[in-house]
Length: 370
Image 1: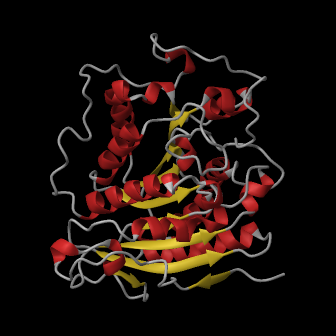
Image 2: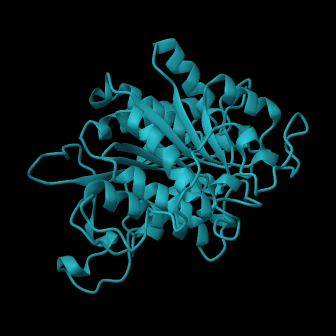
Image 3: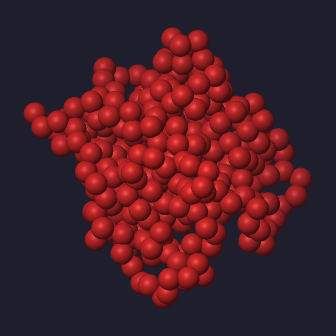
């Protein structure tokens, strides 16, 4: 069996148009540097730490469409030409590659690297990979000296709870793994999910979420006209934690925006809502860790999914590192005033929106990604 290894960044992926070398001309590919292990000094200034996780085993175990192992470089390629509007560093620590089926070893290696990068004091963005990436991120934050004795909330933007009970870890189990590990360590499991697709989560998953005290909103509750409700949910989490681990499963977006994922969404949460949530979390000053997962480049159409993901990543980096930069007009606010308070109960789904039935029949579309 080949061991898990870490490969350095591929310079050919970080390429793009160059209009000049002065700050107003810069793009991501001109700013990125290999991570050297000594970042985080006050003299260098703020930076974002990137690391990839190339693995298909978690999705394979979850009986999904494989190909997420190609995600990290596709995300880098989509980020490369994007403009820099403020001055911060970009450090690329390379990619953790899991060539065989030893998912657990790969997650442990990722955890070690994430802990090291978090201890630079900079925000860390993990480029997945399936959603099993999130467990590696969790392992890293629990090992980080920077986050010891800090309460960390997990905000998952996802069509699925990923709270499956299974015989072995997979892309469908990371948040149940977190819940159990937190319980064993005497920590509070603080988990919020935005974008849940009721037809694609079985009744037992809703029951598990309720038992664990998970706060969630369905995809129907996350429409732009309910943005106030969504942001109130985010604000509640921000108020009760010291730091935020944001996990973005790209299948939360509509299939027209994100076709290149393991389980394309038949409904999905519009980009407008997801972007507003990213603004809110990044500008809170509490965002320490992000994982962006489930990109399948081979299934993407015109790079739509990778481009959408890159837009979210650059938003998070700019807002987290330079929170005084003015927002675009009306960003992060709802055009509809007077939104109702959010709630995690299925019984509270907006009266104007249809309520798809849930229960043991569960997954009616044939998707296996829970």
